[in-house]
Image 1 (cartoon, rainbow, N blue to C red):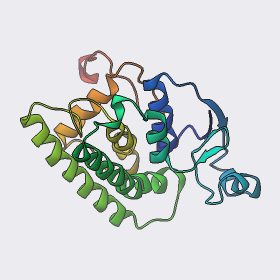
Image 2: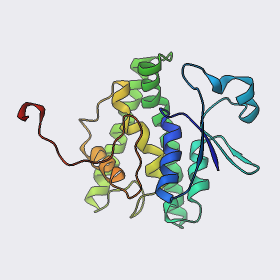
Image 3: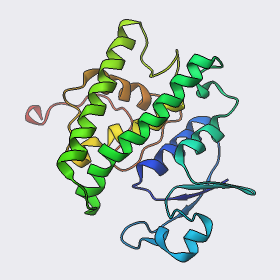
Length: 213
């Protein structure tokens, strides 16, 4: 499988992360997203007319939506979140929620890091609303003795939402007010096979506070 990739893209990272957690090998083709905007060029649009990344190619199959890539990679595994109609509906709901995270927290990050045009107050406000919704859900899950968004184990729902949440501070939105969200991010980062991207790191032993050094 070939992944057309950009190292700083949250959408690309979720596909890389899912593949790593599953032990699936991907061959990476770097796309000059910024500043070259290669994804908007004619050659790339021949592969993906929408001019977006990531793109996953497996033989004759070409996928251009990151959530579809997660489903494709995880098909037939426990990462799909369960076999019941309820579980599958819940997973699909969180995949849609991940798109809201991208349009809010993700756009705030693009604005602050790559100077994308955006109503920054509005996208930050929408991002905060998403984080509050996640926090409320994860608090209820904790009361029920669970940590993941759906079911008893991690699923593609968690992987779809994780990058935009973790990178929220890059767009000026702090995670300090969301303890259950932060606990959930620690659970994701503790998974066997977890890989990093710039701005998202593995769990490490607690280090002394700067003033204590």
